[in-house]
Structures are given as structure tokens and as C-alpha cells.
Image (tube, rainbow over all chains, first blue to last red; front, side):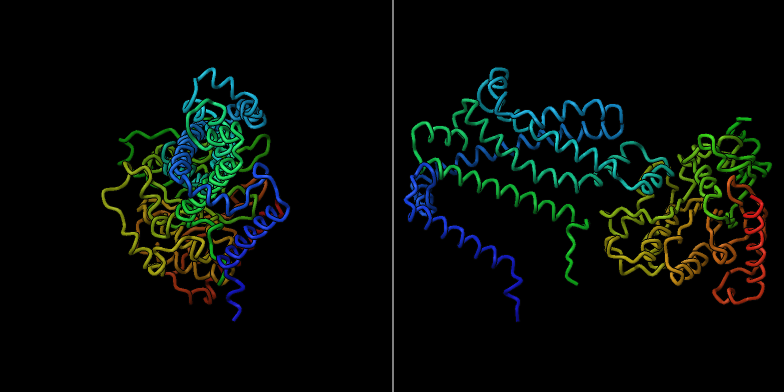
Length: 258
Length: 270
């Protein structure tokens, strides 16, 4: 009957095609300069001229993003579990977390490069540094939100601190951690792109984009931008799939059609 | 008088008078509010004792103090001569909280196993078969389901299995059926009676339901409110095993009436 009306995949495809068509038409009809906006067809052909160049750079940036986020997650879980257990410490750490959150990293990247040196160390530091606050808030909030009745149940048989953390608090924090992860994939990607361009690294999408700007290569710039966007989408999908699997018990993952 | 939970010498155990849960002169103050004035209560193995009272009478507080989750302001609590803290370290209690408190990321079977999986060192040498217990409460087909797929009554049945799976000598039940509808509640008390029938377990059951108190108990301790204190204790000498038809018996009504009068006398006295 009207099943095609409910097909999310179908409509997403139609939306994508429409977007590309309008974009292409707009650039051609208005005769927009390459540097300002490149039509999708030229982005595709630029990519196909040297696909290896873009794929290598995507791979480099993806590594910076994933390793940076992993470091941030490990730091945040350790730090967050501590803050969730000790309230004064949580209050004391607020200024630092807020400071990280509000300070524009564009402003202090050169100081980081001066401190940690050019290339990977500075890039990884920036990605981890800016994504820590959201992970910490998610950890603390999620762990605090563990069902009080379940906590008493654990206490009634003298569960160890480790058992409470591993079997109750950490799983309780998973939903908020995934929300933070989706946010942090975007933030971390932006930080990685920017740091690659600013940290005098030799590769990565950010560095490719910086050089394209320096040499006034509009088509390379826009192909790099689209590759970065594709990486971002890939990251979001990866988080979403991990979430589907790990949170299959959670209300957010339930099918509502019954 | 602040002698709190002094462990009894092991030599005294043979005398027999330290067996069971013993609360002597136990009271609780929160800040400057008397939640519970001094109460004496004993629960022997194989006995079901119900704390019956209106909300705010301190019955849950008393249960929590016995479970070692709260410290009494005065008085002594011993569990087979042990302090509540020591008893919880040795996994002597199966707690059934008011909300089922199932972990949403664990399946029904894994939830039923939860108390077995924690503090493993204190487990007895042989544990009851969780699958068999789930079968007995009619949840055999839901072993792999997640808690959100169950009704409220089914969730609390998992909560019961979780406590029974510990094979602890004492069960502490804090209004476990309070959130359920009347029909499910009746089913649950019938189920609980059959579950706990052939065991040597001491049960402390907290409720504000007269029917639950009469149906399940050997003794009912009626509490008054603010500050909570014992108004009276009523022995329920109905035959065991308890069967649902019992609830139509005049003897059942008679005890219910006695309890109701005690409850109201306690309410008017305060």
C-alpha cells in the first residue's frame, strides 16, 4: 500500500540526489568561482584523478581522530569515575573543564606545537584535550544516575567498589557516553583537521586543505572538504552501530512499531 | 546507650538464644526527627515475620538497619550472633527492594544471577539453579528477554528469583509488591508463599497491605507512625501451606480485622 512512504532509506536517497542536483545547478547557472564552491561533478572527477592522495590523507586523519578520542575516553573514564565518587573533587574540577570547553583552540594551537613539537603529538593532544570535557560530564552524570535501589542491592551483599563500578556504574553511564561520543566525533574531527594544518604536519586532510588554500587550488580544497565530511559521516555511522549493539537493551534502541 | 551490634562470642552460639535476627532496643533518629522509637523484634529461621504499618512508620528503616544499609541510633542488631555488616559480607541476606531494580542491560537470567555473580567469595558451596527457579515462577520462556520487555509483575518475579538464588538464610523484603495492581499483587503473594514454603529461610516482610500480612506471615508486628513504634504483635496461626482459598476463610478475616483495629488504634494514639 503506502509502504514506500515510510521507507527512510528511499527518502534519504531521494534527498541526497536532490541536494546534489540543486548544488550542481546552482554552481553552473550562477557561474560560482571554483574556490568559493565546486560542483559535485568536479569534486568527483578531482577525486578520481588522484584517489590515492585523498584516501591516504583520510586514513591519516581517521587515525588522528580515533586515537585522540580513545585517549580522551580513557582519561575521562578514569577521571570521571573518581569525580563521581568524590563530590568535592567534582566541584573543584569544574573550572578546568569549563575552561577547556569555552577556550577557542584556534587560539592556543601554536603554544601546543611549541610545547609538544610538530606533527602527531600536538594533533593527538588537541583532539583529546577538547573532547575530554564532554566525556567527563557524561561519565559523571551517567555513573551518578545509577539506580539507587540497585546500589542498595549491591551494598546488601557487600559488593566491592570495583564490582559496583564495573557492573553497575559503568553500564549506567553508557547511554550518556554515546551521546557525548556523537558530539565528540564532530568536535574531534574539526580539531584534527585544524591541528594538522597548524601543527606543520606533513599529511592529513587538514594539511592537504591548508596547502590547497596556499596554492589557490579550489578543486583540491573542495575535494578535501568533502573527504573530511565523508570521514565525519563514517565516524557517526560507526558510533551509531556500536551504540545499537552495546545499548540494545536501552529505551533509545527500542522499535516502537508494535 | 550506644552499644551497637556487639558480635556475640562463638561459645554462646551453642546456647541457642543468638540464632535468628535479633533487634533489641533499636531506634533511629534522622537529624532531630525520631523515625523509630526503640523496638524489639526477632525473626527465627523458617519463620515469616511481617512489619505492618502506615507509610512513615519506620518499617522500611528497620529493615534497612537489619540489612546493614543504615546504622541504628541506639540498640543492638545481630544476625545469628553477627553484626549486620559482617552478615552482608557473608551474603546472609537476600534483599528484595520495593522497585525491582533490575539492571536493564542484563537479560532476565543474568539479572536473576546478579547476586550470585557479586562478592563470589562469600557464595555457599552449592547455589540454587536459577533456570529452575525462573521456571517455577513461570518465566522459563523469558530467560533471554530484557527487563523492559516484561510487565511489572514479571519484573518483580525476577526480583524474587534473584533473592532466592542466593540461598541466603534470611530474606528481607521491602514492600516488594507495592507498585503492582491489586490482581497482580494477589498472584504475587500466592507465588511467594509457594516459593518460600519448603525452606528453612527466615523472612522479614514489610508491607502496608493487610491481606499480604495475613496470607504470608507467622507473626505480624504492627507499627504506629511518627515516631514509629510497635503497637502490637499478632500471631497468624493459619495452616500451612497457605493456599488462595484461605483468603475466603472467616479465620483470615478475623485476623485481618484484628490487625486493622491495631493499625487504627496506633494511628489515633499518635
